[in-house]
Image 1 (cartoon, rainbow, N blue to C red):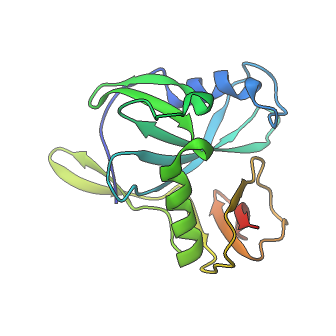
Image 2: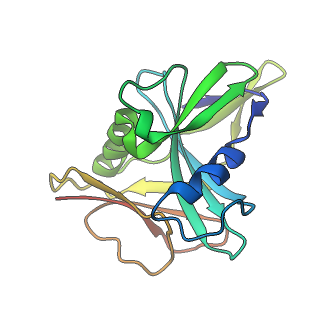
Amino acid sequence: MALLHKATVTPSKLELVRDWLPSQPWFAGEKGADLELVAAYRFDDPDGEVGVETLLVAAPDGAVLQVPLTYRGAPLDGGDDWLIGTMEHSVLGSRWIYDALGDPVYLATLAHAVHTGGQQAEVFIEIDGEMVQREPTAVVRGSGSDAGGSTVTVVRYPAPGVASDGDVLTGTWGDLSEPVLLVAVGG
């Protein structure tokens, strides 16, 4: 279960991601282009310390990009190469935001979801002292298979019609009716 806080974050997640994307070799868009949040999904850190969220964002050309993030209350040891930036959270204070592929908490929670057939975390927000469940904007599910692989491949530009056999995470959002391949774990 993920607990969200009614908070202000500065800069926003989309601003951080927008400014970071052009430095990534896999990014095919324009520098500084506006991004639109299409959907997001979260996994739970068993220790409750690290926020684990994946954003699905649309570029102006309509392409959807998948950007897994982790949010930490302190810098990740050895994580400098994966740091996207920092933000101020009005409830939690300073947060260090990482490309989740460099964060062992993300890799462990993702592998657990893939190998156990797990789904995204339920998300709750406190409103007027009451916990209210938010409807998911993306629904993801692991394949529930474990062929023993350890290499994680995140599909940065997920699209319908891509084969999704093996140790995988698939998902739907918006008007998609068929699951889309999001992550493969192999060899």
